[in-house]
Image 1 (cartoon, rainbow, N blue to C red):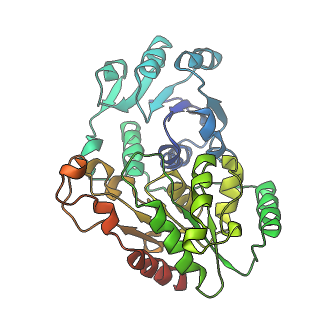
Image 2 (image 1 turned 90 degrees about the vertical axis):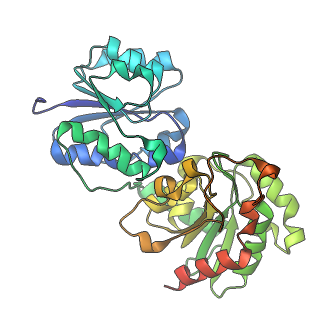
Length: 339
């Protein structure tokens, strides 16, 4: 039995998409315990994903595993919820003697949890977002919530200013094409994204914007002329995450691989088309869009058998991602845009 004003500390210290797929967990907790205090721990580069969230009371960035110790001493927590389990986190919440320690039973250090939960996430039968919510069932919390990113008026001002400076009319349907990814899965080739951009640019009232990090933008820029694209079709410089979210929030659609910006767009209510590889652990069942509005999102997988891992040129279907045609993605995107 938790106190009437319980204090929670939530850990999700991996990547951008993983954090987005955890944003509905504080909402579910506040629905069950409106007076709860919620601290959310993330890596520094994902902090912007949590800003303005109405159900998160405190954000802690974890520079190094040992840097969590002062935060654990600063407040008496009733519950530690570990959405992404690492040994340093499990050990430190155990040493801090937090009474309720919940996490997945997937590593040996789950012995430091008071409530290790059997999930078998690698079987990919549910979304990562659903697996995160499932951990709350140990507290009797059974919620149907979905991730949402929250922006404020300053973000709107930045977005409007950026669009004005880059000649993006407010009447245009902005389609963001994001070829890059964190390389957690096999990707659709960059050159096909650029061929797609050329096709989409010819659609009525459509404005394209090719995005990426600094290294990716440099690569994209070198390929623009080959695909009959203009420098203005590509983001000129990489933006900080908070600013990038503001730009995404003004888009009609984002087209990308299985990557963090995909989940950001979904959580902002933006339509998406995404390409996924056939490796089982990369399944869109687990890592695809997670939202009530699934009809606003298209997922494309090459028509080949599911595999355990990529064996490269030893595979009869290599390179399977190349089998996804530009025309197939264009058709999916056009149908969604016109809906």
